[in-house]
Length: 151
Image 1 (cartoon, rainbow, N blue to C red):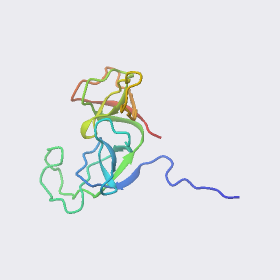
Image 2 (tube, helix red, strand yellow):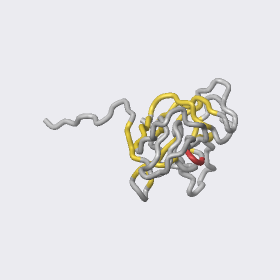
Image 3 (cartoon, helix red, strand yellow):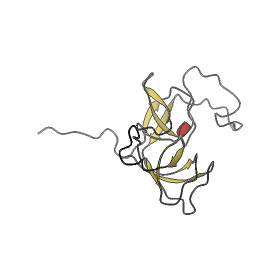
């Protein structure tokens, strides 16, 4: 009797990065390099959320992080990033999101509220990636709790 063994059951998975990655941002496959990058707006290929910063091989080392903060130590960022696809995470909102609203990918790995397309609309495919679980909702430009539903 043939069987299969799960490669990863509860995550996270690890991927090589093609561009500098900021922690707590949505990532998707980079079709050119077969690595990962920040998800683009309305992506249908979101893999999950990056758990820390990562930089591609050969990236110049700087005294600030990719988010612009001073480095606390001089550890060199890794070229691989852990990506989680289930759980609750504080993610950056690129628009106001109400408590309980469904969310999709926004630009540069952020989240925005899902807006249902008009009936019969063409070319409006999106991947619902989760739901806002921040009791007060999330204002534009702030971080708040999002429950990922990518498993």
